[in-house]
Length: 145
Ligand code: ZN
Image (tube, rainbow, N blue to C red; front, side, top):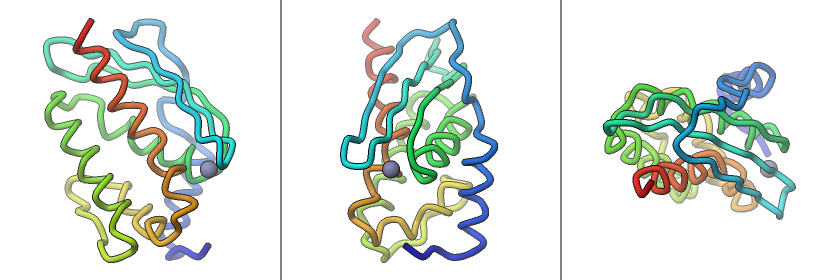
């Protein structure tokens, strides 16, 4: 798989120095998501109150794409309103289903656009989506609690 080298650096940097990769005990929902086709696995905690994402923390193992993507997603969601956060997830999902035809909106996705090239590799899309889908799942569960 070849990605733009600048983007590759962004991904490697998140992989080597993942953000929010330490589970916080103070959470409103916890989920565990796996991507069996690659062996990626994450546990993700969210703390959402009064419609604001107060914290997102996670732990996991897996390929660089899955771990970097979860780092990027967690960092983007913190401090956003729940509505805004879910829109960001949708925007990333659209990017991942674009088969390489979209570059992504950097204002919305920030470092997430570094993963745009992954959409050309169907086998890796689930790796890239893992953290985002885990966040969405946790956010929905949290709003039911
Ligand atoms: Zn993977």
